[in-house]
Amino acid sequence: MTNLQLGIIVIGLLAIVAVLLFNWWQEKRIQQRINQQFPTTEFDPLLGNTHAENGRSDPSFVLEDKPEVGDDGVPKASVVQQHEEEGVDPMCETVFDIHFFTPVNGTQLIQHIQQFKYAGNKPIRYFAETADGFHRARIRAAELYTSLQMAVQLANRNGPMRSEEWDQAFMYADNIAHAFDATTESADKAQVLEQAQQLDQLCNESEAQVGVNLVLDGTQPVKAILEIAQRLGYEEYGMGIVRLHESGKPLFLLLPGGNLSTEVRSAGVEHIELLIDVPNSYQIQKPFTHLVEHAHELAKALNAQVVDDEGKPLQRDNAVIPVIDQQLAEVYQDLDAKGLRAGSDRAARLFS
Image (cartoon, rainbow, N blue to C red):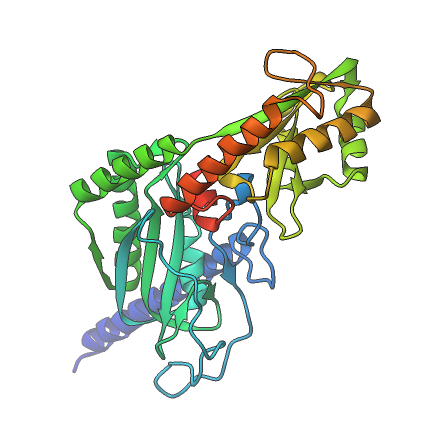
C-alpha cells in the first residue's frame, strides 16, 4: 500500500470522526435548549393542574424521581402500583389512540406533547398505559409508556368541534407518532363531527343562567368591592370570584360590572351581578332563595340595592323567588337525565 493510499485512508477516518463529533455536539446543544425551555422540576407552572374558568384544567404531568430500571430499559416497577380511575369520557371526547413500538420515556413524552393542549378552542387531555400495564390519568416523568390516548373535547360553549379542529388534532397525533415511532387509530371524522353537533345541541337545550343585580351608590372601586366580598366568604376560583359550597364546588359567581373579576377593565363599577351558572353550579335546595339572601347580605355591606333584571327592587319575600327555585329544580333534573349533572367534571368541561 503506497503512502498516498495510507494518507487517503487516514483523512477518511478523520473525516468520519469529525462528523461524529459534530453530531454529538449538535445533539448536546439541542438537549440543552430543550432543558432550558422545559425544565424538569417538581412543579412546572405551565403543566400544573390549576383551575381555569368554570373549573376547567389543563392537561397535567407529574415529574418524579427515576425508578430502578432493568437491563431491557423498562422500569422494574411503576411509580404507582395501581390503575388510576379517571379516563376518557366517550360522551364528550373523541380519542386518538397512539401505540408505541418501543416504550417511551415519560420525560421525553411530556416535553413533546405539552405544546398540544388545544385543537382550536377544544381542550385535549392525555391518558397513557405504562410498560407494565397500569392506566395513567397523569403522565409521569419517571415511567415508560407503551401507548397514549389523546382525548379531544367534542363541544363547549364555543360550539361543536369544527372540521379544522379535527384536522389539527389529527396532525398532533401524527406528529407524536412520527416522533416516537408509533401507530395511530382514530374514529371516522364525519361520525365524530356529527357526534359533536348532537352534543352541542344537547348542551344548548340545557343552558340556564339566573341572577340578580346590586346597584351601588355611585361608582365604587373594584378592589374595595372584592376585599369586602372576600371578608364575607367569597373566594377566587378559576378566573373569577365565587361563593363556594362546602364541597368546594361553586354556587354562584360575583361579577363586578357584569364581568369576571379578571376581565374588568375599569378601576370602578356601578353595579355587581350575582349569577347562578346552572350547569357549573353545585345543586342545592332553593338555589335562588339562597342567592337572594347572599345578595342582601352583600348589599348591606356595600350600601347597595338588590334589583331584578328589570331594575325593580327585589325583596327577600318576593313571590317570584319560589317560582324561580322550582324552575331551577326542573333544569337540574333535566341535566341529570341527560347525564350532565350540574357541578360535575363533565358539565365543567362542556359548559366552559
